[in-house]
Length: 344
Image (tube, rainbow, N blue to C red; front, side):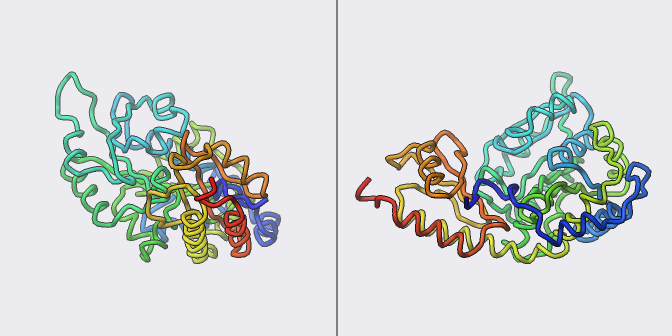
């Protein structure tokens, strides 16, 4: 099965498995796991931040950030399709006691004047605005990359109002590859950044949260509250460190594969792609198709290709480290062999 459901489905390669078995470990709650420490220090340097924290998942990293930046009863400004709002099980309210202030967006970009208007004035009736939230790349925007000039405007706005900015950068390095900049140039516009090791980078587990030293000191306590106090965690940090050091450069292959696949979808199917394919995610709408989204999933599964129904009338194809050029050409061949647009 050629698995295009997500970039989370990749398996650890032989090198990762060897590093896991040979990892130098200690008790991370005591700060004594040398592999975890190396990962955190390397990640902090890479993002231009003072410190970093290894977390079990992107969701845990995001929740630790919320608990650190905000206090219960405050409001977090975000776009209305943000991962933390749609996909994290209402943890923002259940665990952090925060309210989401969701705003319309275009591929993750909120109009700056709309953003400013959403910041609460001082009034006994209103919640306080506690944080501005960004997502880069934007999951619901088809892997859309937030422009640097937009990030700069958001940070300037936040600074004017004395607010912190958090970036859910689960696919931060995909964004950096697409923009041809260092990840630190993107991270400079946020007070804290979370990125996943287990998505495009292909590690089996884990994420990293980065920020100032004082922020990470508090976030470490919040991670413990969330059940993330790990012991000999070097066995899972080792493949994450390897992925971060060695696999960033190959993300451009995923992007090229996605563009090739998008061309084939446009040429051979009646699906519609309404976004620019900037990174490794394609969202194809089925509202122009004679088949439903569920029918497309079943059809391609029968041909040996796994995708997901992303919305009621949309599909998602996600290229990843376990999908080769030959695999993409096989999927292109499958699409070419389906009944053409004029036959459906």
